[in-house]
Length: 358
Image (cartoon, rainbow, N blue to C red; front, side, top):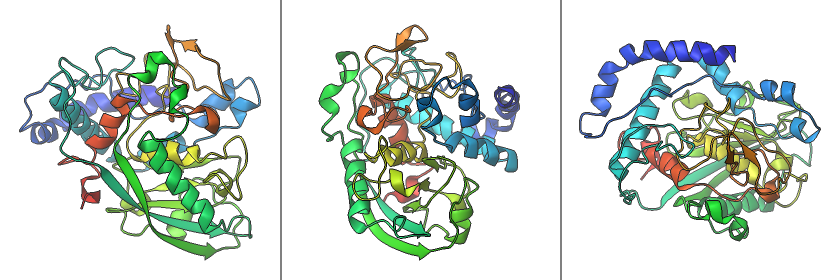
């Protein structure tokens, strides 16, 4: 939580530093953008582990926020860049809905969810070409083409809302379950034998096997991260030399060398969500810390296993089946409309991943 307090102080300083950038971003906008709730530093997986009460809570491990906090420490300009990306995102969403660009979620008119019905953007179906780098020290880690194909298929099903689990969404949330209109195409697979048996989360695998055209392609490294870590990703705005997603091989895809209960390919769906600017569903903090999405209820913690519905925290039912929670693969099966808008905003004119569009 010390990081969060520091973050809030840093953001206060950014309000002055970013005035010129805000004017540039908002030059052609007629909407008000409220950034008062924005933050960068968050709780990490170590903070969650310190509060864990059972084995399940010690198993599901995404290290994206650890990586983000470390990158913020190492790159003083990253916080400002993320502020600008968030400002652009909120302006895009507010412009679509004709409302206020407040990012506060939990159903409190956040994420630009102002008056009027949402209007379609002009981006159409967005296709993301994917390069997969398989870095292996043994035959199991040298996963098959079939396993890679299964993961690409899962990404397409999850992001287009064509998976077989969507009919399980409770009626409370079914109205906001979204087809993100984002697809994925395998553009190439690269195999790298390497004697190193674990890679950690310091982007060493990306240094040894750099991303290929990260401005136009999603790069995914499949390697043994170690420490029981499932995966990690880089948010928009980070260094292009480390841009992309890393997933351990036993949690990639749904066939071949996979390990239950994370054998449904949803680790990669979750990490690609981060890559496309989604926070964890609980906001990596307490009830008042938000994921900047209006239609995802506030929560103060991740969920694990396959929780029953309803599971409530922060005086509302958790959207436990959201891909950005920590539940088992079989029990996560939706993005929300608000999350869809956030993801698509980074591809819009001036967005952080605009260069990925043809």
